[in-house]
Length: 203
Image (cartoon, rainbow, N blue to C red; front, side, top):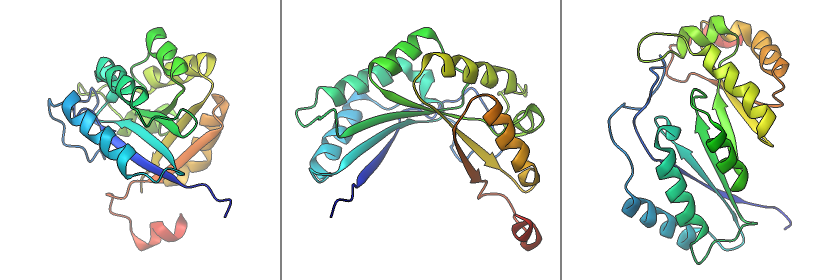
């Protein structure tokens, strides 16, 4: 009694990405979600979530902001659904942090969409694992997005992935992200990496 429950749904709206992060598990392809499929999913979400539970719908990819127009269309479908209740539905987008603009910021603010970007920490870590398709590091672009997003959005979350080669730098990772003004920092292990027993014990 008195406990709130949330059903979380993730929409993989595209498998396209402008980056080639070393540990990414998404098969990069030139595909996108159709509005027909999106409508079926949204109908499913509202039909199958208990009426008293909150709904968290996340836009994911690939890189979802490559399909910003599609994301806007799906948001409209959600908000115009007969069962939509503003107080019970939360929207989020998980992005690699390399795509941002005033138009994107205005849309996120207007529709109260949570902004979560991926940044593994200082440049010497970020530029090792999170690289563009041409091999260039992404730290400058992502840091600029963080600074701009902090200025114009009410909430900015960050997801940092650590690896057997980088977990020993976690204190520096947190210090770096906090120095950029980030308060909600999520630290996630690279589950696909070959962790040794010794590394696990050190962690």
